[in-house]
Length: 255
Image (cartoon, rainbow, N blue to C red; front, side, top):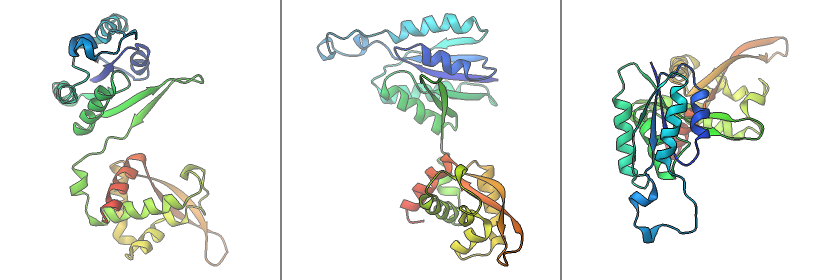
């Protein structure tokens, strides 16, 4: 079963687009912020500005999404109360049956509501994304959601591998995907091991583990032999976006 949780502000389009960009969504949970008139003193609300009603928008969305065959729930929150938003979204995630694939669209609503939704997704190990509307075509941008337990359980050698790769990433003059195998020479097993002053055999399992956990990506490459005759097959490893988050954290901690 696939469930989409979406924060709702004054714009319907980003919620509709997020729904259409996902496959086989059986239930959509809309989390609109209550109108400011309900959560703020009248004297605190800026006058002369037309404000939409996110709750009303949510009920309009409910009708259009149900037409596509998905079940829809609506849960209102105070969009200016971070703690309330965070707790409610965590509850909504945890209420789903075990094994449910939950994704969170954090595009709509106030900044506090969006941040709360992102935090909830990270804490519950859910996928999170936002919708970027562009003239050339709207896109769904997946947001990395680190597993906080990793900060403590990852192990010293894995931390050193991530930190080493981050340092090498910073030396590149262009994205990894645009680099030749030669330009990525420092990203092969032998060079990584050399940088850590260990043998290649001792890091192979760690590299594979980090790839399985989504922190590294790899590809096969080929580099010229030291003799200049022919090429040798090599494995090239680099950081994913999520891997960069961990690597940056561990580098700063001096791990």
